[in-house]
Image 1: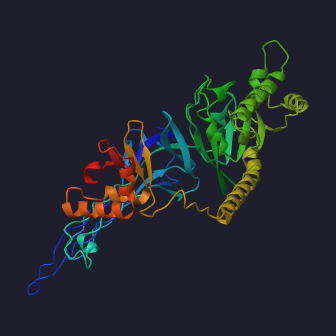
Image 2 (image 1 turned 180 degrees about the vertical axis):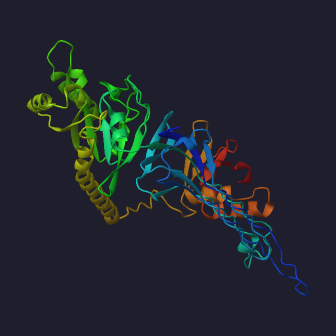
Image 3 (image 1 turned 90 degrees about the vertical axis):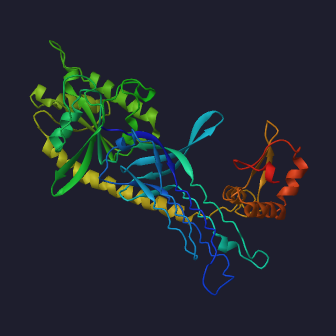
Length: 446
């Protein structure tokens, strides 16, 4: 089943907890602590794979998590790191991180996976907790506690597929798009004489002169498609990634029984589709477009009059063809090859230029906004009167503290007093309201 949009929850693996262990060896009465650190949790990646052409793997399963890190062990043995998880998607997938903001879900684009092998880190694994050997010092010679593993990062992500094809075939329903891709390639889409036969894009590999390129049959568009009419704008995004567009016009629409052919109908159809493309995206309006006249077998393969009429309307026809009888199809395949190669080269140059611009950008350092130091924190009073403390390193330290262990609690209290947090909270706290560091309530430990 073809699926071009999916929303899933991805989580990095939890870190393993550190070990509390003591050296036990004959003739060594004071061996001391030897608990090893826990292993790091695996990271979660999304990667483009050319052997995948749909997001249907993410239709039924919605949650994915990397492996957890193993617990630390005695004799200073560290736990094994968790394995990364790699989710495969088709090239052309856009990954967006979703977040709740002001009651609505908003998204931040994390990246685009355009070519085979492109990989995006979505969620970090958690750090493994330190074992008790880590906390040994001259003033703490018998640490009886270890850290818990840090939870892995969790994100809800939306994946949207924009098919990557050299040639995109567009036009009204039933103009012969599926017939054309079947005549050009080995693709075998469903072909029937009624509108919206094609419900999903069809890809076909076109072989010519020892080379090949990919053509894509986009489901039929109608006037108002960019606003959701017909099949709506569900497939317009696929056209954005096509190198060149083949705009197919149907000669049969200009033929009226007992009347002279009216080429103005074709002009109106062409302009209506162009308007939808321009309304949906400025990128589409600038994309290279070639116009084809299809079903020339209905006029004895002589479409000269139609070509001239369209030229008067400033619409240049590349070629008149008949997909049903394959008239002109072989010539079309050959004529498209140099155009496709030229557009490929342009896309490669644009990508290299974009990568070079990104490389030249200097990082903007804002130490007053983001800091990994333990002493960097912010205290907010919430609407319910509670206090919430936020700070990257402080939140990590809190979530990894084993509050069921007396020694770990003493260490927690020492740290928050040393960084000045305890005194800062005392100035704002009424002694009863909840106090949270991140999501952890800590008022009973102050």
